[in-house]
Amino acid sequence: MKCSVILVSWNCVEFIGSCLDSLSNQNFPWDKFEVFLIDNGSSDESVEFVKQHYPWVRVLNNTENNYAGANNLGVEKSSGEFISFLNPDTKVDPDWLKELVETLDSNPKVGVVTSKIYENEPHLFAVGMRETDDLDWEPIGNGEKDNCQYDGVYTVKYINHCSCLYRRECLDKVGLLDTNFMMYHEDVDMSLRVRRAGWQLMVNTNSIVYHQVHGSIEKSKHMFNYYIDRNRLYVIAKHFPRQFAENFSTSRFYRYGYEDHSGDSLQRDLIVLFDYWLKERDSSSNLSSEFALILRKLKERSHDRLDQFETDLKLKSEGFLKAICQLEFDMEGVKQKLVEIKRKTEI
Image (cartoon, rainbow, N blue to C red):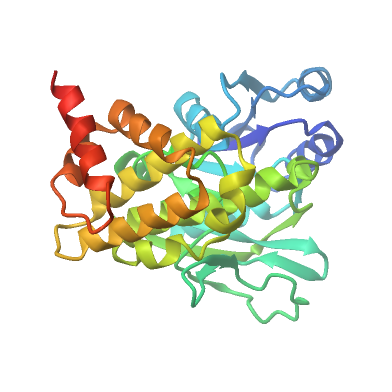
C-alpha cells in the first residue's frame, strides 16, 4: 500500500461526510491508498454514519479520548509506505494526496510534508508553522488573504498535523506521537524530533485543504485553551529546558488554567511537565534557583494543592524526586518537606 490516511474523530458527524466525499474524489489510484477513521469515544452518530455510507473506510475505536494516541493506533494498524494525518473537519482538493506523495517521492531526505490550508477561502489558516519571539508557535499566514505569497514547494521548520504526509521510515526512526500532549502542539514536538533526527520538513502549497477551524472542539473552548497553553510549556520543557523557568510563570496556563482545571488532571500535567524539564535539563548551578522560583510561583497560586502535588511527585515520578532532593533550595520549608518525602519512600 502506498498511502494510509488517518482521520481522528470525536463527535464529527456534521463534518465527516464532506471530508470523506473529497477523499473519494482524489486524483490518485484508488487501490494505492486506504482510509482509517479512529473514533475517540464519540457520543453522536458519526461512527454509524460512516459505517453505513462509507463502507470502504476502516473504523477503529480508541480506548481513550486522546488525539495523539488515536493517530498512533492508526499508524500501527495501517500498511502504507506514507502516512497522512488529516483533520476530519476538512475538505481536500482532488490533487491533495497526489501532490504530497510527489514531494516525498522526489526527495528521500524529506520526512514529512504539509499542505496549504485555508480557514475561510481566500483567507489562510496555515502553510506550516513558525516559532514566535516569545517562544510560542503559530500557523504561518494565519488570517492572511491568499495572494500566492507563500506558494511553492520548500522547507519549513514546523509542519501542521491538520494535513500532512509522513514517510513511515521517518516515523519508525523518530517514534510515534507523544501521547502526553493529547492534542495541540504535538505537531511542534514531532517537527523538532524529525529535524533533530536529520530529516527535512516541507510544505507543498499545491496540496490544498479547506479547514473548519476547531470544528470538532468548538463547544469546548476551555479545553482548547487549556491544552494549547499547557502543551506550549510541554514543548519548552522538553526541547528548550533552559528557557523553561522564565516562561512558566508568564504563560496563560499558569495565569488562568491552573485554578480552572480539575485538580487530578492538573496534578498529573504538572508532574509530566517537570519530568520533561529535568530529563532534558543538564546539571548546572542555576537549576536550584530555577526550580525554587517555579515552586514559589506555584505556592503563591495554590496553598492547598502544594502538599498533594509533592505527594504525587513521590508516587509517580521517582526520577524527578531523586533529582530535586539533591538540590539546595532557598525557599523556607520546601527542602525539609522533600527530605521527609524521600525518607518515607526509603522506609
